[in-house]
Length: 524
Image 1 (cartoon, rainbow, N blue to C red):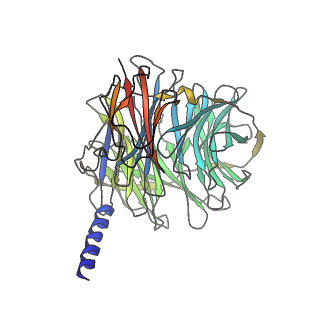
Image 2: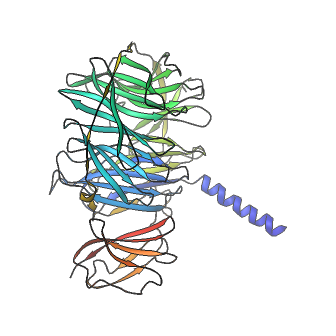
Image 3: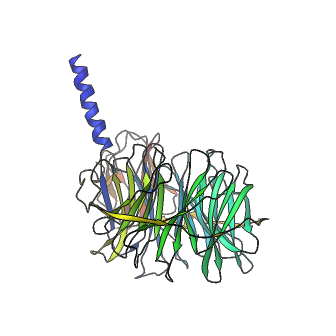
């Protein structure tokens, strides 16, 4: 009995430690490429995906790289992939991401004037990459995956000289099932966000363009078949959609940014309550005082389990972010948390976790490489904020806007191009550091029992490989993903590569759902 109590006590300590765990990870490249802000998505298991892009403008202004990482709940690296994309103009750009039921990830954006779809599996390995076009100037800005695993892609396409919002329904391999545009009559624009609804439908947020400048914002509710239930066009003043979360009553909290001066960098968050039938309530604009000459670019919104909301926005150029909070009734707290840029990120984004923690991410300026690079952190809100924070008073007001509901429905037929074979393994590696010195133990690379470790690397003819314990299969793949060699247990102590041509290869070991991979360069 005493032994059982001791075991239970130790288990409790372990669980408490895991619940309170904090980590801060700063990902810095081993070369002077220029990374951009990451996309971060959560899996039901508690794992998380992070994906970002980088460019090397020194040697090729159009060469782009795609970096994908999967982490455990405590920040341990589970899978990684780095891909070099074809050198086309304009280069690849990410705009949205969504998790698939099988644990994989869908990434969307634009590439060489066409809309982009990329899928990786649960081990971060590339499955498919496709481009979509109607008239040569298309993009996907976001993606949502339904319970059956079918992605819905939204963005903008070209019809004549106009830019229309479009919706593309596809299967998990990017095969188009249907494509159409629901647009407000006579208004050009784009869908920017899509969020799944509890009834199987979705909410679409978008923006409209007048001349060369953005102006109005729209919100559309689709049913599970893609039919519009209601649509609202907010006519000014200069709004752009950021996020939407569904409330327990079926209604929505919609977050927008509003431009308040000539530069787009000068703005403030605006929160719109919309009921389940599309009725728009009184809005609230948020200011982190002092409000003079503010740099408030709205970045994210999330909802905690108790129904309360939090909003993140950049405040005062190079001075950090503010995190506003509202209770379940919509009442705004009189103080906002002020997060400095110094050691954490510029323009903080935050995602709520099931246990009440927040997942923070964004980009951080790195003086060592004179560039921005991706950073991710986990914060137990019962503890001090990573890298420090303070409080600033909050002021609120509201804006005046008009509404329009005149929509038209047009079917589309995009051309699809598969370019999976053109995405090649990349040689850029990344150093992971902890700028807040919170958890250097957590962010170490996995041990040799958890990853493949080839040596020597580069290799001539004979390669040794650690990390094959409990693996059922080992593959050697070339840069195009074609199998070159295959081994099964018992694995040889030394892999003979004398017949393998020089080049970059991927070693991939598997057992069940576990995948371990490593790159190796063959040079003689």
